[in-house]
Length: 492
Ligand SMILES: Nc1ncnc2c1ncn2[C@@H]1O[C@H](COP(=O)(O)OP(=O)(O)OP(=O)(O)O)[C@@H](O)[C@H]1O
Image 1 (spheres, rainbow, N blue to C red):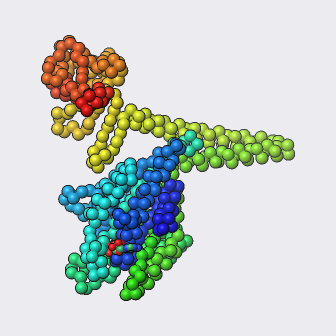
Image 2 (cartoon, rainbow, N blue to C red):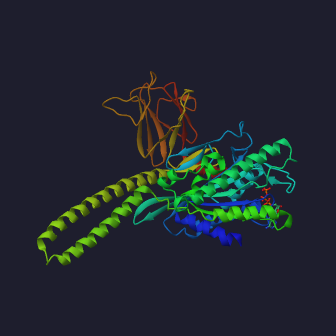
Image 3 (cartoon, rainbow, N blue to C red):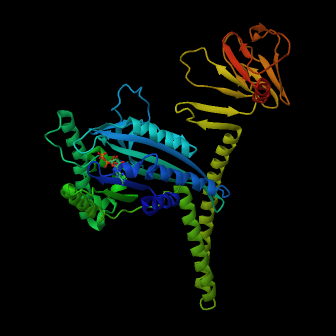
């Protein structure tokens, strides 16, 4: 029911392109983690929201949109930020720094982002992150979350609007705060430091909320308002990271969790007061559409407006023909200029898009598979340079297209497709012919070429996995994806 009441509006906000934030606030043991994360039998808001994003993607697969979902998971413990998805091999787990980008706002430097393609992957990451969270027994709750946890989903939609490719990016922050209990002197020292740090974040959150409520126009985000009323976001890591969610470009929902026990009366009243106060903040969310596409749309609207104006002038023209002609020419010029501007922008934009698409079609790219790896799959035969120079840090892949690929030092008269330098390389060292998938290496006379350790002087057909050395220093591995696929099938 909580998902129906609140989760669905998180989804619809994100799909429209707004930033959304949902956070749970309340005393220890009142059900914040239960609400946000849930249990295997009673699934919480976070996994349900992720599921909603994926099921929406499947439903809309007919439309010309495509989505990318990236997630990150961090906790703030004792005012330090820790990546919950970076495995246990971190040497310095608490060293992530919060920084502020002039346009995008505060962010955590070095926080791992994980590209997810289905719901199962999200659940795995969530479980991994939850297991890494710091919990401890308090007097009321024996698995109490000692930290504030922020699960962030970056939801990017690529859409085609009036034949114009554009991207809409929305950020969903799902926050499970630590318990709002007071630091109890009966706790041991660590718990006390923790308690005061948890409270520091929550107290600052309270101060920020109060400041936003009393800010002119209910916490609007314009800079003049900010100048009149200082909001101490940077006094705690939590409020700094949630700056946009609290008083800016975000649709924000606060869930207050309270205990039904009469012994918790005071805490319950304080939570409800906190929530009632927070209710008065007025944010100014906006759709995060691409600035170029926005400009093009606005210019188009302006043209339509001017065209309308021109038509109405035409009606008046019988009354004052001369002034109409003058006006019309001016308007016409303005329209032409704007049309030109739009055409130029559209062209730049579409070209950029096409280039990207062409590259993506040629290379089948999958980033982040296996968390740290970058994989490039290509369906064309290619050479991969195996560098001997330990100072060379790039990975180079040369495609061998249909026809001839010339390799050598090159000269003014004879340019080479792959240029190699060095004393052992001839100006025209060798050629690689690709005749409808049959790939042959043709060494030039006197050029040093070896294939799988054998020096060759005549044409030699290359097979999948061949190791080629040109000159004495250039080593390549030959890959033939189509041949490899047949070999794999035979092997299985
Ligand atoms: N609405 C609910 N229905 C059933 N069980 C619940 C409900 N809310 C909370 N619980 C149970 O109460 C216990 C405490 O809940 P939870 O861990 O969510 O508290 P919390 O507010 O996150 O506490 P802390 O701030 O100490 O982390 C858990 O065992 C949880 O399963």
